[in-house]
Length: 77
Length: 132
Image (cartoon, rainbow over all chains, first blue to last red; front, side, top):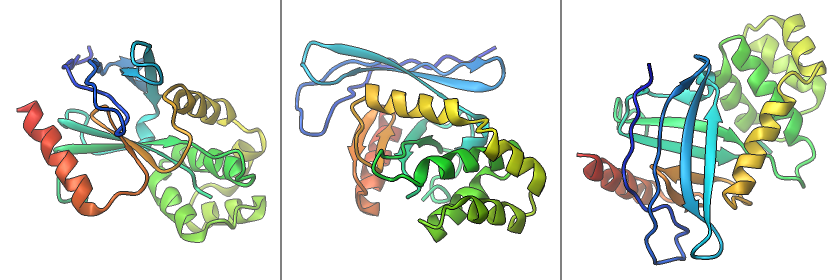
């Protein structure tokens, strides 16, 4: 079923310098949602937040297998 | 930008209407209603072009102009079919500490604010190299 891509990468606020690891997985959920799990360190340096990002296929541009995924959080107003 | 990296970059749009933008919530829900009829991106582009003209009549009007089924779109909007989905996006953004827009995650790297094209290019190129 799903291709699972996982890699080590730092997810960090630009103002922070210490590297942290994160894993990102992609998988189809009920053929409707893609799921992105970001293990990000937000706030306290040791506090790991694991965030699951889901999205509707209609809100994606570009091929599923693209090596780079840009997630844009934006406001229409 | 996406055309420049055709096939190598995909873009995911996440709803992050800010609380102070009282008209935004309906607009985000409306875009998803357009998506349900296969026109998410054209509607998305229209919203950015006309902001902040987001009264109900405006939102329905854009749907009609884009050739969507007007009645179906209006029902979707009035029933707030995608309210929970927009809410979920907001919750995910908040969990990541994202409180301003636009904010980007480029292969997990947080980019806050509208950066220059050059800056995006540099981050994308780096991400592509790291994936080789």
